[in-house]
Length: 113
Length: 112
Image (cartoon, rainbow over all chains, first blue to last red; front, side, top):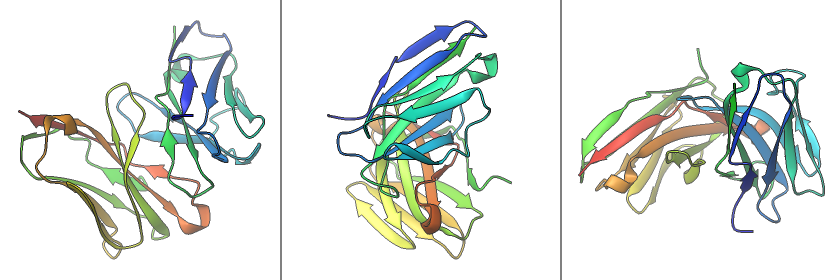
């Protein structure tokens, strides 16, 4: 594919609802990353996948957050029982392998009412 | 203290000026250094990627790393209005190259 694709591009939901965010990495990229970017701030690391396994989940803020990756391709980030503090842009990146330069999608803008 | 510090700006310069963007860091284990450009409502785009100390040039962009001072810079020559964006520095250690630590970004505006 051309680049990293994320969907939806925007999501507005009510507090307490669950949301699922999707990332399609660049074809052939084995490493995949999720970040959160709050307004006017830098990127906050959430989780990293090498293939389908997640060696580093250290950035997940709480047990309401989970992520999975299947087929060494698509990944989904799920936030359960959303809170207003979860409002942010969620960015996905992929790289050829761990440690290689990361290429980003345009993110999902999540707003919790 | 944050691991990576970056002046948030905003920085406004006239078209054609040389721009200097900087970051300082505290972790001496950082070996990989990157600069990303982020336009409004877009994901970060990799501009420069360097390993260890030294300079790297790509067109109008030059990245400098001074590990002894824990200081990195990005210079933009002949700045254009299209360079107006937020610039993020980023870095990672050899032992955990997958975990990139980002600065908070500097907003740059080039006045025509």
